[in-house]
Amino acid sequence: MEHEGKLVSTWEMMHKDADSNAVITELHKYEYDSVPVDERQFLSQAPPTIINSYEIAPRRSKDLLLADIPDIHYGLRRLPDGTLLPTHRPEVMDGFLQVMKDKQPNLIIIGGDSLDLPEISKYDADSRHFVDTLQLSIDGLHNYLSMLRADNPNAEIVALGGNHDEVRFNKFMIRNAMPLFGVKPANMPESFAVNSFPFLLRLEELGIDWVSGYPANSYKINDRLQTVHGEFANKTSTAAMYIARYAISTMFHHDHRRGYERRVFPDGKALEAFSFGCQADVTGSVPSTHNGVDAMGYPTTKYEQWDNGGGFVEYRKGDSPFRIHSVPIEAQDGYETKFNGKLYKPRPEVIEALRNGK
Figure 1 (cartoon, rainbow, N blue to C red):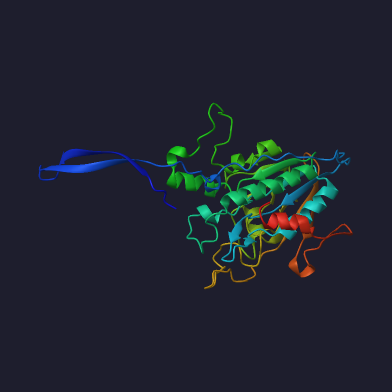
Figure 2 (spheres, helix red, strand yellow; figure 1 turned 180 degrees about the horizontal axis):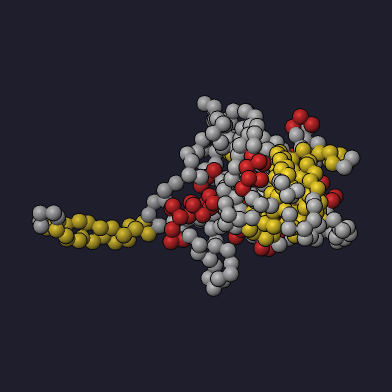
């Protein structure tokens, strides 16, 4: 809405046109009433969260436990009727949160692509759904990470940068605002850049370590096992591609499918590569080459060949073997999570919060 200004002065200015003829132009000065600014129009850090945790004793076992949270792709579509449709899958996220709280892992890996970020992708948007949902997605993911920290106060939490959450932020700034790329808060040279994933999500305040540098970044779990976000997505042989690339067993992400491959070499050394799927929506809300939006502006339901769930790895320090445990969480089971003989049901209040960026 335009606000009418008050004319306070008028004057004339003379200048020459292209033919050196004198031209007189009348100029006016107006004053306008100040208009309140809606701060929601601007991208900012997620609001800080006060984390209240019960005192939970750390695991007492020779075996350490790793929990893996694969590709969340947190994001929200605002549909034509005003409702929000998540690109993440709240029921899967909640189910695995409950299992992790019970198991109290020593190490939690967030495997990359935690945010989907179609708003700043180099690819054309499929709709207007994401015009004003980026801040809501940042705030909502921060709230989820706060729950994760509150439930697991003793865990080391490590987040890997991926091609969506790390690279899309960086590439967007480089393409559109190079002078602002990498700018940090005043006199804080050790801080993250203000327009970066870890800064906007307040990872440091949550005690979450950020492993950046995709696609070259990796995190070593012990002398036999590392984890990467990954860059392969082959429907039949993704795990085998990681065995061919690395001289160490690898827990990978990125392709959204459960996978496993093991290879024994002539010297008796065995390498394994495995993944636990994703926690993104698999019904067509994630922008991809396979999804579509109909003429009324609603995403078409189309199931991706992806697997929902998470996983655990038992391991020890040094050159020690490890054991993997997949935790499938599927729609066909009503998103009920079964692990070690215990049943976990979706919690309506948590699902509602995750569905609406709360």
